[in-house]
Length: 279
Image (cartoon, rainbow, N blue to C red; front, side, top):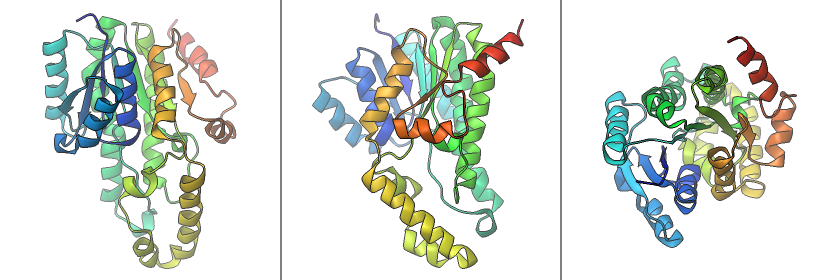
């Protein structure tokens, strides 16, 4: 096939769905994956509305056999892979005294090790094509936030992993980018799968600060969140720019927020230093 091939994870809704549709509209052969293909209804409807064709396949990022089967299937059917968009993940709200270490491990499994697994499987094919490795992280991968200990830890880990990997695979022709959204419409309550009132009631001594956090965050998501399509525009920038930045924020708010910690917003200064380590 003449079209470049992109695989997107976590496409049942939100950023993954919007990114898959945007890539297909831009002419990419788009393989949209999700853990449960029976949840692909919204994706298929969005593709139909956009007048594009999307190849929907099963991939569970926490299952190594599923990841291997999906990548093998893409190569068997298309003969190449030009880009991977790591989007699959799940939100989580909690604080360590009130949850188990196993809860934290589950968050890391989806949000960090799932990215590691898909990246490892895709890299031989991305090296062959001189492709793109794009990962949707979060402003929470730069700035730790209350009651997001496990989630931010996972996103910090992803950013450290990718920032360390970027100069290495860059020498072999693979461009690496991380995309950092802030609040995205509909995702806060839906993606963390909790009843705020119930969680606050069970929070004990943490109830009042948790109530404050939930009230503030729900307000932010209700009034100033970006749409998934707006975030997908930034994902497409990483996918199609001649020289994509390593770090891309998806809004002025996200740039300002991460900028409180990062003087080097696009990551170029850090990568210049670490690339020099390689001689």
